[in-house]
Amino acid sequence: MNNVFVYCEIEGTTVAEVSQELLTKGRKLADELGVQLHAIVAGTGIKGKVEDQILPYGVDKLFVFDGEGLFPYTSAPHTDILVGLFKQEQPQICLMGATVIGRDLGPRVSSSLTSGLTADCTQLEIGPYTDNRSGKTYENLLYQIRPAFGGNIVATIVNPDHRPQMATVRSGVMKKALYEGKAAGEVVYPVVSEYVSPEAYVVKVLDHHVEAAKHNLKGASIVVSGGYGMGGREGFDMLFELSKVLHAEVGASRAAVDAGFCDHDRQIGQTGVTVHPKVYIACGISGQIQHIAGMQDSGIIISINTDPDAPINKIADYVITGPVEEVVPKLIKYYKQNSK
Amino acid sequence: MKLKIVVLAKQVPDTRNVGKDAMTAEGTVNRAALPAIFNPDDLLALEQALRLKEQNPGSTVGILTMGPPRAGEIIRQGLYRGADTGWLLTDRLFAGADTLATSYALATAIKKIGGVDLVIGGRQAIDGDTAQVGPQVAQKLGLNQVTYAEEIKVEDGVATVRRHIDGGAETVEVPLPALITVNGSAAPCRPQNAKLVMKYKRASCPMERPAEVPYAELYEERPYLTLNQWSVADVDGDPSQCGLAGSPTKVKSVQNIVFQAKECKHLTASDADIEGMVKELLDEKIIG
Image 1 (cartoon, rainbow over the protein chains, first blue to last red):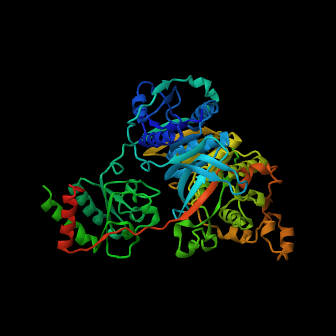
Image 2 (tube, rainbow over the protein chains, first blue to last red):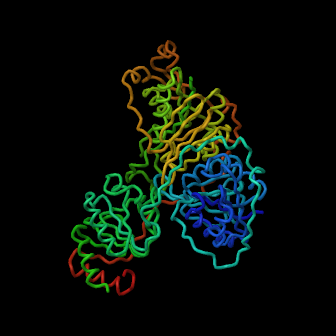
Image 3 (cartoon, rainbow over the protein chains, first blue to last red):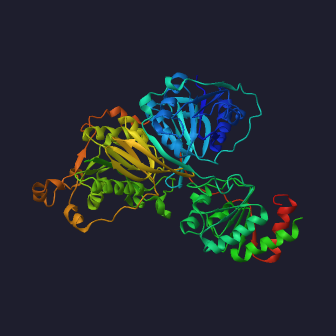
């Protein structure tokens, strides 16, 4: 009872990285609260194929729902599973990815259980809360911290009275790490038909098509990122050259993507990918809040901009004031000269 | 097949163009400084509804919105583009609603409207970016749901929906009645039609009108100029499930974003500066 639950999302028999990131975070929250971490996964033909992708993140108990019609995901069967299981298990916290699936499933489950759900959290913490109206104090609530109003403010949301406290988190926001402690690692295989009625399989997936990601932006230790100041596709060619030399990946700001300089799947920011590389090289990026939200936790930030007052310079470790088309070739040249 | 379609639409502050005066000194949002617009994804939902209306003669499209009286503007903008009617949910009891209380209010209104085949909304609103209200309304009404739609076709009571998924696309079939949310990648909405603007420009909800109603006789002559305005009582709503009272989530605190200036090195584009930095990063094994 009152444990922390993570809903694990799958593509075929592969567990999504965002789910592993949330298991890592969920483990920390469970440790802090002194409760167990439980995980749920639902799919077709997954028994024996997904457990090893989930248990090493410190899961005490894993519920595997394996049955026809559970993959590709549709709303109703997965909702029935979560609602049924949660009525039984009474979790205090439920986390899921702020993905297409999580954003379809989370609200449906929260509405069924009349529990609060906060989308796209960027931080999750445990703390007390005092309700100003009733004066009542609550201990150990989940602080669901998220940007709002297009990233212009950060709000801390709590669900004082309703359980589970539900939150979605985007891919890449939390860091995944194998659990070094000891978790129970129990696996159970509930009977799907005890949770899902035959009428739930009403939506038919006629065609399901997913392409593998073309890059590893999220996992890159160095990111070279370009903004509107790159001027065009040619400007980005130069960044690809630099990234090849540095073994980096290329990212872009929303302005650069909107202008067509770079593909959408490389967008970094609140509405794109969140990265935390060792080194982030921002080229011709002014630093809108929405962009900074996706890269502010980078180790070393280098900003190259002709504008000495670009907002991104405030969070940079190195500010190079000058034209990118001059600075980037010099970076390439001096890196080649000085590295072994 | 004739379809009765309800489009969920929200009037939102335009957070895409936030100026310096948009935040107060205390770090709260100065809504007055942001223009109020038709939520962009909801306009795409309206376009899908209007296309279905054209493909299925005899169908109707109504705009359902919740907000202060001035949100009646959203219904007018819908009428200008080809919607047939609209409903404004407005009541102090609806105020302060989170997504769950909002979905409760919208669901009660859809029940009140009755006989709805298809509810279409935008995937999310730009002031909250939660994408929660659509699925929550669907759950409350027991409707089948499809989110992230890019194109909707209806035949023999079944909708075929092309939808966006992470890293790909999907086509699904869903029997009506259903609720569908439309993704930002769907077709843009048609512009306003000049004739319809002329017809509906004086359309308003009673609460939007000043005490001394101008053109009072016009409203008597043309009942379609009086838009539906519903309170909690009008939709047989339970006040404890509406507004702030019906919201499980509470805002603990709100913080304006202020960047803390770090200690940093200022360099120029000179060869010496760049080479110096590259050597420093290599020496400290940060790169290489």
